[in-house]
Length: 346
Image (cartoon, rainbow, N blue to C red; front, side):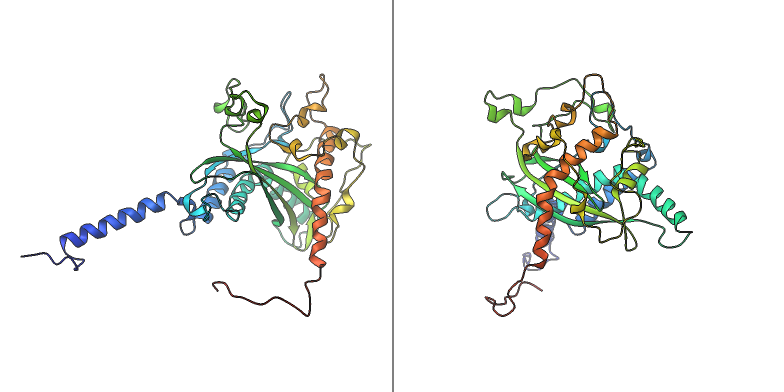
């Protein structure tokens, strides 16, 4: 008796279904970042990783001859999977932003989650036990500059750190780097990875171009911390997180209390020191730049208030031009004439 190959319940039909099921599973494994709810799973993994009891241990403010914990990068490794690539067969520009989400979540959850809890408690007590009991942190803007393409399944690292802050916003920068071109010798949260200096992949060449870290893209984002409709100054949360040193009585802080939500960020641009004015190019923002330690004297191993404020102002100088793009919200779109209206998938 011949098998009816059109019947899925025959032996050959079952074998065919098994092959396609295997193919579907294999394709899903090659694109785990883009399975249904894959983004949510990545977010949940970051929250579990950094909100566990072990991860809540306080971070040291600084280490000898090292930058302040506040400005140290956190590295996330990933690959450009097939479903992230466009018809040019490289990572599509739109997919960078979902990866930015994951990198920023890891950084901010690890650094300021203790401060968010403590600040929320203090503000609730200061408000005579009225109002919201929790703080929210919200994304205000994000942009990305692309430099080099990322090919399918090419590995990359996302180096994310706090760049600066003002009365209203906290600015976060992320670099997409070719995996292995920058290799730290000290990992503060993972001391078992510490090792002696190694030759980086970028240093194996002889030309100056080969010695430069290979940057694929660089993104900037800004966040606002809210208690209801009121804006909580980032400095207060950073201080409650133990990331800022004691403030000298003679110096003035950029904040003193909870600011209203309409505080213009450009008002925070104070006088820029000569050392900060010298650092104005994007190259100064690379993960291994020397600006962290260049301003330190040989006898000063601590990041005091003045040193951290100088680094904050250096970042604010770079962000001033970026903040000017907010004026485009008021740009007229053309009330009377348009080219046309077309539809995308609803």
